Length: 308
Image (tube, rainbow, N blue to C red):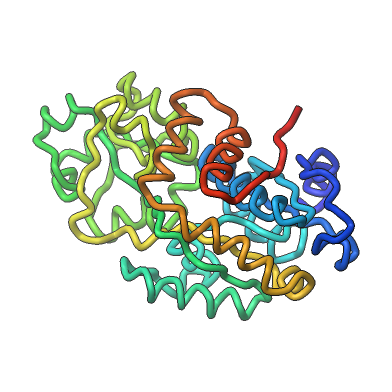
């Protein structure tokens, strides 16, 4: 993993040379590599936070599409990347090795994550109001055929249905294991597709799967008239967007770096994030371009450049 990431860093997207009076100049010009998971929203978030840092003179670089949490979080812990936009509930479950189950309580989940991350040399910045959680989704035709409104409604028909989702779903506590534990769901089969992406949506629309895991901010849910089944037993935890960064990086640059990250989080609502996702996933715009426009509109200035 280390060799692969080091090689990948050679082609990281860069923010350009900071001015001599910038925070980078007084900190040895140490690069801040912002990593992302392998789905469009995570890449977009990486450009948002990296762009805000770049605007204030920090040498921020984006390393997009690294993979699942099983790859990205260890890269953060070992210093191969310095910052990752995370999601509070899933991050807590991962960093605690499943010993702590996050809840829907936003404040409690964030504070517990801060404690667990702190023990590993990671600082949790301000969580955004924006949340993006797992959503169990079916087509309108499937919902009508089986009279599905809640996830509980799937229990009677799941043995005859195929479920689709990210390849890591069978091991993730808020995916198949959680659906079995909380709702008693046992599907006829599971097909590993992608993390709430185009493959999953296509399989759902084509009838290759009958139910699927997407994300609550996915703009195609509304655009394609998909039905989100209510999580009526509260399986899914609070999933606020939150930047997490290495303590060494925070100490190197001081409180102004955290202030730059927090300024983004303070302006990022679920509605805003969904609209940004729509520009990327429906309109086909590049994540770095969408991030650049939003940062300008929010008065957060020039962001990191995208690939040429």
